[in-house]
Amino acid sequence: MQAALLLGTNGSWMLGVVGAVVGGLIVLAVFVSIGKSKQAALKQASDAVLEEARRSGQTIVKNAEVDAKAEHIRRLEQFNKETAETRVDLKEAEKRLDKREDNLEKKLDTLNVKERNIEQLETKLADRTHKLTAKEEEIASTLEKQQEHLTRISGMSAEEAKQLLLFNLQSEVEHESAALVDRLLTEAKDTAATKARDVILTAIQRYAAEHTCDSTVSTVDIPSDDMKGRVIGREGRNIRAFEKATGVDVIVDDTPGVVVVSAFDPVRREVARAALERLIQDGRIHPARIEELVEDTRKEIERDIIDTGKKAAVEANVSGLHRKQIDLLGRLRYRTSYGQNVLQHSIEVAYLCQIMADELGLDGRVARRCGLLHDVGKAVDHEVEGGHPQIGADICKRFNERPEVLNAIAGHHGDVDPISPYCVLAMAADAISASRPGSRRESLERYIQRLQQMEEIATTCSGVRQAYAIQAGRELRVMVDCNKVNDAQATKIARDIAKRVEEEITYPGEVKVTVLRELRAVHIAH
Image 1 (cartoon, rainbow, N blue to C red):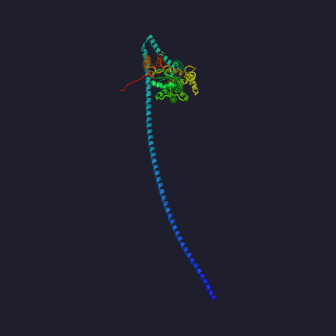
Image 2: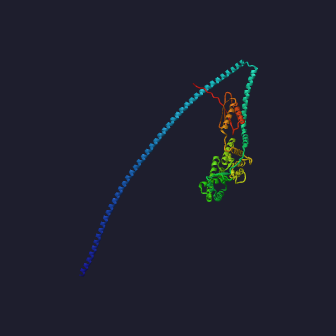
Image 3: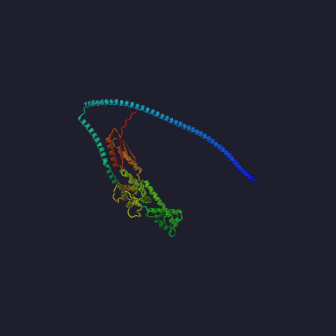
């Protein structure tokens, strides 16, 4: 029973072992089956990937081939296009070269034709020269024969021959005298410039004159006596406030409709006049309003002074002036002398100085500057002690004016000795302008009379056909008969006419006498 029990126990164990082994084999078989299934699936997936990669590679290769063919076609087309353009350019260049070659051939043909023409002309000229030489020899021979024949048949007496000789001698002497005058005039031109300058400067100094009077008052119209009373104010307070603000004297008398403003300072007087007119127009006349209007008017006048000075410098063509000099020039607008406005007088003197400087061969720019600034001291001569020439020179010296300009300013009334011709020019121009206020030109009757007198002097000379005074009487154009007057006699006639004009006529500047001797040969071809 124990054996049976033991056998039963062992049998169960064996069964268990066998069952375990069988179970393990079954599990192993299952795992092997699953592994094979996975291996088959992996192989199938790898085959699919390989197939997809193969198809993708073929697609890429095909696309690359297509792109390569397209690039090849594009480059081929570009090459063909560039080749065509190059061919067109070459054809155009070839055409231009052909055209240039044709032009060169035409020019060469033209040159050949001209060369042949020149050769023909040279041949004709040589023939003509030869013929002229032969004719000259023939004419000389004929003249010689005629002289011999005239000598044989003349039969002149001694007295007749003497008269003929004297007549020929007189003609020769006149010719030689005219030639001598021409030669002496030519020699004199080398040294005449300096002497003529001294003579003219000495002569124009005789015009010197001085100013005689200045204007120191201005009048303002008053529309009514009531307005005059308002200007005066209660117990004269408005007049006192006005005089204190402007620094002028206001004279109110019994003269109806007029108030007189008096002051030696022309700018101050002008400020007072303009301010009083504005007060009358405004109607609000009281001390506060007076001070306000006077200040506004003074600022406006100062601006006008600067603008006027600049315009004067531009009109006189003088540059590089200091602002103070421009201010002083503007102030001269309100200054009068000998009935003249000093600023207009200064501009005119600048103009006259330039004219005379140009006539004398001097620097017109320096002369203009001297003329414009010569009276600049008059702008402040009521404030500074001394004469206006020295005051003006001292002012301009501060602004580095040239010594010639300073000397002209200080010496234009003869207070100092001239160191240059510009001082004498300023003296003369100042005297010319100041001595004729309101009139700068001669009358029309005197002008016409002077031109007629010049023409009459010229026409009285022997051999003169016509005479014309031109360029406002500065040139006398004389036409002579070429058959009666030769070149040497024409020079003598010009000198004689110029001398008579100097002696018999009073004229400004100089007169140029031009004698024209002309031979005109005219024949009409039918």
